[in-house]
Length: 417
Image 1 (cartoon, one colour):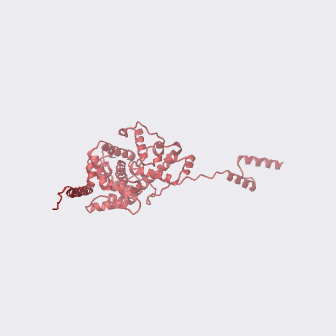
Image 2 (tube, one colour):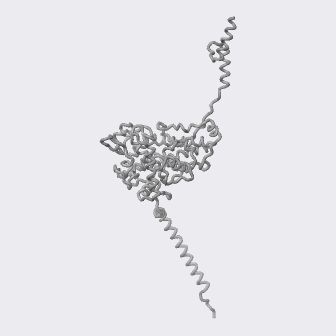
Image 3 (spheres, rainbow, N blue to C red):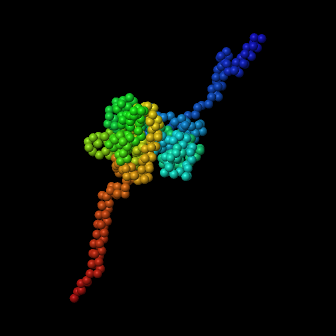
């Protein structure tokens, strides 16, 4: 009887998963069977980050929750060679440098179809049109085979790796500005940028804080001294986006060429020399990797936002400041709209902004937005004169040869008597 009760009790325990009172042999057998059933977890494909900034600790990195892929996405990534994965990730970094610090909807933007009726002139009218504008910017940086409407089979892994590139570049940029290049950019001591309280105390007015009796104060979008060449606290279309700090912050000066470029610019300015970036780093730079040869509107808008954020009391580079409540994403769109509309309307002041940026960053550029036909010709004037002299000399030689030949053929003959 006792044996039967023990047997029934053991069977019930096994059915309920309670093995605390079973024999050690039975427990070992059950453990071995469960190990056989357990699946080996699939390893996520490693994202190539060969161009990560060594100084970028990732402290300010955003986590893009919407970009996490499914197992089918992982399988697709594993079927893709390393070069393709690296190229998509680099495309995301290129986008963050030249076209936008944030992507509308993060990875979900890759689920959007291009609207054939999209009108660039109405890009900033609605959220949907802003998304369409960014889809076209993404198309400018993606490898050729992934431009246009991406297949559903590839969309998952491409969107994830692209967003990894965007967030990695944004993180590295914020780290470099605050912890490495900031003192050279803003001509201040490292301790000035160390603590949020110190930044607020020293730079609040520089980034647009205006005190108000009723509300206590607020940050302005355009009445921002750090944006203006003469650091005026009132918006001036003629000097906005021309503060030298922006060019040193510039994704070109301090990011794509390294902190030494910003230092060189500052030293040159203090010595009364040109503010043109002349530093040539020993290692391959972002400028060389992405073939950058002129200033994009997104680079200027991004530099303006980054300058404000660097001097703010905000601790991390997010779409909205955690201390100031500044909406940096909206701020970027506002600056980008001013610059793109100004270019389209051929605004004299905005064209001058691009001309000055290219003069300081890309003095040899022949494709800048602000360059006139006269500007393009001026750089070639010396060579043009040389070519004209060569042609003139050749024509003179041909004329001499013709005259000599003519005398031989038609000159009077000498008769002999």
